[in-house]
Length: 166
Image (cartoon, rainbow, N blue to C red; front, side):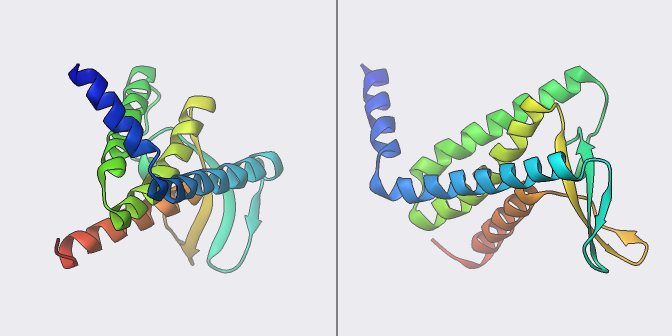
């Protein structure tokens, strides 16, 4: 009986009107990420494109997690990290549905980007990163649109945690 009540409660959380806007944000971020990556993969896979003195587009395949950390050729470790990422996204979705409106926005931004990168890990067995920020000979980690949204969401989450009291 408890499982049925939990299922009904979960169903009600999912179909709340306020969730549709936030779910749309997740979808839009995921869609923007997919479009950008498909465009880069199809058009710039073997070349580096100069944008200006600070930005190049240069496709690299990241088999690690954020910014290439934990890169390895070991399939067991890669699969473990992919499962861990999927688990974290699932936990974030559960928290998302039980959060207030502002927190839902933060989680939606993070989840949208994380789903984009998870999709790449499942489809390509690597994440295509292509935005190369640099100044002279110093290059920041190459990243993608999903990474931008994940980073923005985490920064907002940290600021909110330190400065906004519940």
